[in-house]
Amino acid sequence: MARGKDGKPAASAQKAGKPQGEPKKGRARAPRLDPQLRRQAILAAALAEFGERGFTSARMEDVAARAGVAKGTVYLYFEDKKALFEGLVREAIDPVLGLMERQLAGFPGTTRQLLEMFIGHVVTQVVETPRRDLVRLMIGEGERFPDLADFYFDEVVARGLRLLRAINERALARGEITSDIGLRFPQLFIAPLLVAVTWEGLFGRHEPLDVPGMLNAHVELILRGLGWRET
Amino acid sequence: MARGKDGKPAASAQKAGKPQGEPKKGRARAPRLDPQLRRQAILAAALAEFGERGFTSARMEDVAARAGVAKGTVYLYFEDKKALFEGLVREAIDPVLGLMERQLAGFPGTTRQLLEMFIGHVVTQVVETPRRDLVRLMIGEGERFPDLADFYFDEVVARGLRLLRAINERALARGEITSDIGLRFPQLFIAPLLVAVTWEGLFGRHEPLDVPGMLNAHVELILRGLGWRET
DNA sequence: AGAATTTGACTGACCAGTCAGTCAAATATG
DNA sequence: CATATTTGACTGACTGGTCAGTCAAATTCT
View 1 (cartoon, rainbow over the protein chains, first blue to last red):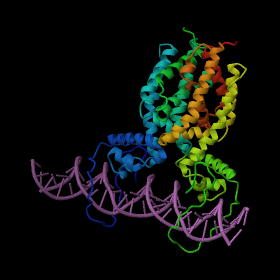
View 2 (view 1 turned 180 degrees about the vertical axis):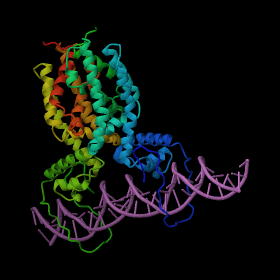
View 3 (view 1 turned 180 degrees about the horizontal axis):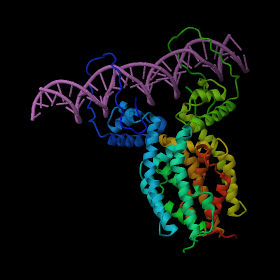
View 4 (view 1 turned 120 degrees about the vertical axis):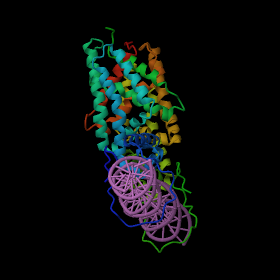
């Protein structure tokens, strides 16, 4: 049966079948665990494995081993490899954006403070965690999984753009900036994040990058570029 | 033997090996071709295939078919899959950067004109061509091929950073800008290019992106942010 | 003819996903 | 409380399929 999507492990629905070999030599059996916790363990393992090897090259058996279970167990929690990736994105990204959306509503401070706070979030919640790899994964392999890209667009990109446009409108309304570039091309705001999640793994050995420094410089640059003036 | 790296197809140096089945009907259909041209054809096919499926998922047999040869032939020109990818990067990127480096030396116009010219190059020579996929490929799979990442850093990234820093110094010397942010974080200049090479394939269907428009807005934004004033 | 080049069947390794069987915990019964 | 029974999470050998890389035979060129 194998539910996948999100339920707990489906009830076993095996038919009787024929007998088979003798008792296996087997290794330690994983103790039964709260389904929620097991699910979390598998997701964490998957994030690590996918991050290290990429979606295509990651082996389900390694994900299982890392989660401390056998391969078959993973399939009790997720339909297939793709569903596992999807679960990953859903679980890992939502909290970050959700938090920022809630913080924007009714934020009292200046746009500069707002942006600096968000940068801080993104650095500690994404760039400096394994979640960083999710972005890299989407860039590298998303195109071959259109429904995954669609899902990512809805859950992450569209929400992110909405958030950025809202910030821009707020800043314009408060008279803090004068340009509408950020409204037309909110992508320019997050572009350096792609550099941030990418650089260390690829080129850090040759030329380390001060990510928070770069992102602060970026805020400075765009605010001035947009015609910033203190209110 | 299989030379790979760059030579022409190596002289056949197969060892004797053991006997095998009965006489096969095999044929050698592809017209003998100038090794240079054949090499080009294989590289072009590889770029297309790698771009569409990613390095890991691309099949050597498809590369061969696309180049109009049999699988074995590819191995006469490239040691293995990785060498093929490396050849790709070396061949495709160098001309673009080389051109820009030569144009910078002794450029008479303003920095704004210089940047706009470079943006134009990058759009027509990279973003709007299959070369775009090389960037995506490096982001997505480069981490698993450290020697490739090293090669890419030397050939592309370091050169690009050098170029950008030179542009910044020139602008500062000419009194066109006042900030040194571009010197400290030249990555901020190319960040939107990552968005540009990424967006269409992943999200174009949901929200098309006016790439030249965005890049022009970017130039505008950073020039103003850096304290631009006409000289 | 003889050398250079191309071919594609073949090998060996790898891996996603399956499913018959196992066993520890939960529940029912004495 | 102790013992029998049931449940379903967990296991891992196995299947079916894929694909990088090889090489003897076929073809083309000089």
